Image (cartoon, rainbow, N blue to C red; front, side):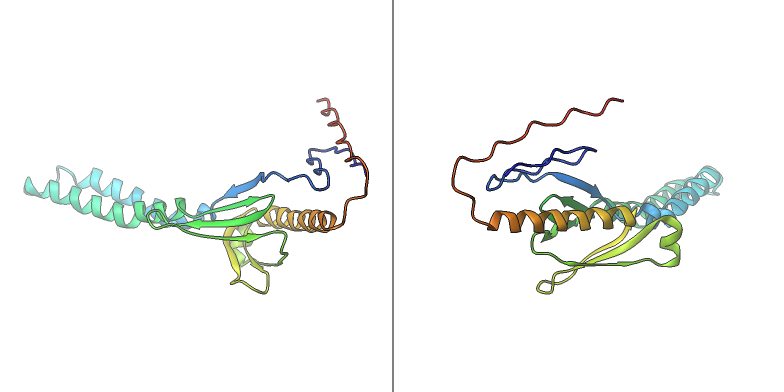
Length: 194
């Protein structure tokens, strides 16, 4: 059994029975537009502090202004940013993973080889930004929801491709190998000139 040569950047399929390495396909966070109001608050606090600092009637009120500004920035800017930063989706050649939480990490994953259905939901604002929500359901586990992800069409296509490839490899590896010497791995095709 020979493997077809690969063109266009698609990786070669491993030989039957050979272990397949887990490769990173994509890593992304939810869309950053959820930080819009945090950015507005940061700009407003900076403008208010710049205008009011030194213009307050008593000198002890300047430190009170800075303390109040620091608390507002911490609660309305820094905490939402850390929550967004700590929420990461990862797609590999074997599974989809969701990791959230800056201090207490919660992690969920779903294997491509088990297969799952994909549901894409896009609201009006999500359509404007090219974002959407993908729900992955395998019928056994709780659905994995990739909420408000950027470039939802591209992510959907990558997930469909990974499920298809994993199903094909699982089916192929479940078949008994023919007797005889193991098949030779074909050489890598030359890189396209350009």
